[in-house]
Image 1 (cartoon, helix red, strand yellow):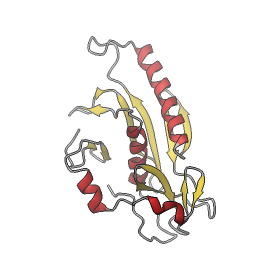
Image 2 (cartoon, rainbow, N blue to C red):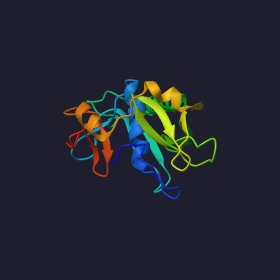
Image 3 (cartoon, rainbow, N blue to C red):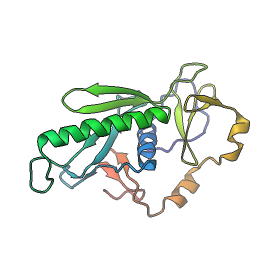
Length: 195
């Protein structure tokens, strides 16, 4: 997975969908929402949110809520209780992500899900990339370099109090942490160990 950076890119580059997943996971974890934990067989061991990449090249992420299989003595939840919990928490995730500047589309099929994307650049309408800036959601447009915070434009002088996180600082700050990161093989911690 790549970390959001402030390196120059061309207008033809497509955002890495893992950047959207990483930023969405960060937004949910910062508000103390737990991530779902899966066991070795892929079954839900601990209820929580689940983020996965959207369509290739879309810079979107999918967000849902997963609970342990209802109806067992271990969970104590009926199927109706589990469905109600999913609907309530997915709505809460939608509200939270909207507050952080994400574009949110609620998908209501058999299970509630969200399709989220970064806000478009107000100047050129290109999808923006999330930046890791002191835990704040700041978006950067690759072609024009414009930065936004939520829906408010930021100018360079507004960013003077923020220190952008580069790869070395990130690795030092996350050494040994257990924050979940989504990979093709599921969630892993910062050291690559499966969760």
